[in-house]
Length: 476
Image: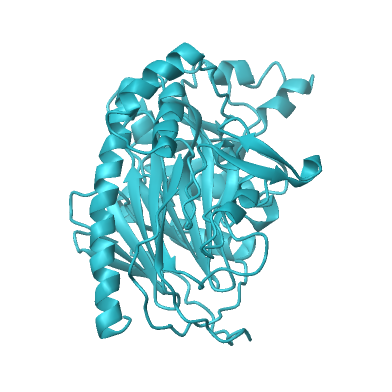
């Protein structure tokens, strides 16, 4: 995943009043209640679950927090997040390589690269963090690459949380829309104070804004292919939406000095603590399809009716015991959720003989034929169409940590020559080489990088025009 930033020049705009909303975390009980309301009709059949009108909880009225007067707005900055985790801050510091003092090693200056910089690691990291808004990126391993990529993005304003996945959009724990393929054809879908606008019906790009905070975030939902991801462009005014804290996000403090951004990219300064995560549940992966006639599912704990794998993951997260595995299955035209801790079951002599082992889970078939068939696409769909539980069930587990592969100097040199054909700066070339080094299909990844760079330039042109019009006609 790559976070690239470049400041949009010549845009100096009038200050904007911002409402200081209380940053109140949604409790697990509230999120579970929302999801329970969503799933209540699913047990009566998928046809009713699909047609149910989804409603979200009304945000509670909050008094604005006391904060310092808004500083005059400066130039507009851009933050890009894409590919294997590359970062270029609002002030143009590239994560592909830089020199920085290490506070843990007597403040000596060291060279940092993709083997040590935080944006290349697995985990949840703040992209932007301030009094009025918090944006977190979830980095993790996936198909097609041996390194982490940004798999999901979550935004929090007040007590409203919007989570964007490659194939779906969620608001305060409830399904909002279909992501890359919107359920509705209308160009705009609002959830709370958030507005989500699709560029056009067939585009994978959406823009996210909020009525209380002045920013624009373009998100590209890459749902198809071997490595689903959410790639991003973030725009805001210099001097706004950041704080004096050292934890301001990987995008940097946007103060015009790129060198002081480097300390936020090392030593996990911007790593999100588990208790502070605003994502619905831990990241999970599709493990495979289990045939109940061949694989024992003894010891799995029933969790009730759900609408899909995402809501099942949340239910398993909310249970008091640790359950890293879960399954969904079709029962009487509805979908049921079960949770398990296979490692714990395998260590218990009373249950080991009867339960599925982790090795068995890791060797499951990725599909089982039938009408309908069990496959990754059907199991991970927002509205899954599954075979009966007697034929196959969908098994999921927590995402495995990425394991970067070795990239010899000879391979790096070869990739560098290819990258020079499409990228002009040393930093961009280095980022391209990193992406190609960690890919199963380097040429395909290079083509994706080039295509994203092209589309990012189009979004950048649109944003320049948009923010320039705000300067002339006032803010929206």
